[in-house]
Image (cartoon, rainbow over all chains, first blue to last red):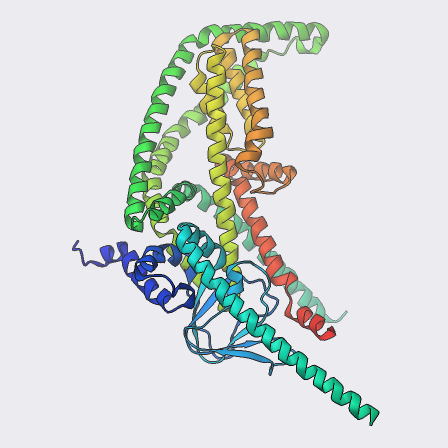
Amino acid sequence: MSANSPFWQNFFRSKSLEDQMVDTLEKLPLFSALSHRKLKQISSWVADSVYRPDTFNQSDLIFEQGQEGSGMYVLLSGQVNIYLDYHIDDSNLLATLNPGDFFGEINLLDEMPRSATAVAAEKSEVLFFHGREFREALKTNVEIGYEVMRALAEVLGKRLRETDELLRRKDVELRLLREKLKNSESA
Amino acid sequence: MNPGNSINTFFRLLLIAAILAATVYAFNFLIDMVAISLPFIFAFIVNFLLSPLVKRLEKTGLPRSISVIVVFMGFCVVSVFMLWLTFTYLYVEITALVERSPIGIAKISSWIQTLHADLADKIPSLANFDIQKTLIEQGKLIAPDALAGTPQFLADIILVLMLTPVFTFFLVRDGGNIKRWFISLAPNKYFEMTLTMIYRINEQMGDYIRGRFYEATIVGFLTFIAIGVFGFPHAGLYAVTAAITNVIPYVGPLLCIAIGLFIAMVEHASFESVLYIGIIISVIQLLDLSLIYPLAIGITVQLHPLVVILAVIFGSKFMGIIGLILAVPVVSVIKVLFTELRESLWRYRPDRQHNSLRQI
């Protein structure tokens, strides 16, 4: 049996998987602060928590608001729309995501219900990071775990600030509308 | 009555009968499969013990393939050494016990005769009932079957000993890929639910099997120390009995006490010694139930004791000794499946969710 036989390639395939994982992780903001060496170090542990579901066709539901969430998705190809109250008002589009974007990241920290609905806008491929397994993987190295969690906190903080800003703008709009309504009633 | 309706009812009944027959057939098939796939079941159990060690080695920076080989080799060496040590020790112990058994058996025989005479005095109808003769006749009936089954039993053990390490190696090495393949079978819609379910089953089974292993080891060790400290011989024999029977919930401790008392009777033929050994084993079993079991297994398998006992009874009825051991893990897996399906499919219902949102 030669060293290039499928048996040995299969046996040592963890090596190529690690490389693939490093390539994928490097593109994610969560891991952007880590050096190539550190990424290589954690790739095999993180690989255990990453899954690849089948390709989603256009209009396929990836997850739905209210459904118990168990991890984060990373969009590899295609486009994904994020909706609030999808079935009530399909036009309530929050965001359109492109390859490299990630969504459902809060469920890397907990198993709470999803706060929005994700639908494939076109044929899309995703990676799924399972929250519990991911957290266990990060425990293996406290320093790297801290850096990844800090990056996650930064992303969540940024999104929270954006939501605050949006709410503030909506609040101003609402007050202006109320005043207009009051003026028109008094007139 | 409309004839069309009665035909429909007939076909429905036929369908129900067919489903019932298929279920019974599938159940029997499953039981046969479990009996055949013993090496796989053992490999599955050992996999839960070895996987954490592989992960621990991986943390040190060793590649996965090397970690698997190191852990597997270590497991083989330790297992062979432990088996050799245990069997050598047990052989010496059992040989010594058999050599001394005529004295013990004679004593037990005289006890039975005295007891029979006392009982016959009080209940005259028992005078014609010969206990010893009945026991010997029963023994003669059981012995040929037991002897006839011995070659098959030995062949099964050799098969299990040969195949278990092979299956274990591939399960430890490819466990993650097997899981991925299994998850890939689920439609995308149920992807997360399947993943969470497998994760929880894995976690619960792993905790249970590791907990049982630690518990059996501690109980065996305590029995060895206690019997040895009180100066009774064959401490190893009692320890191995306590450790092995410990894997059977609730029934195991009773079985251990019964076997322990039998060994004590054959060995010592003295009422005091039998009583002391009985007390020592019972105290350790109580300690296990009240302290070791909650610490080692804790809240991993939150099943009502009655459910556990029923599971053990059904397990032994359908699958013998293997059923006794597997009953609790199987019931706990069913519980996880049921809970997860209820959580995912019943509690979360899009229509209800959206109705409530509409109300807001």
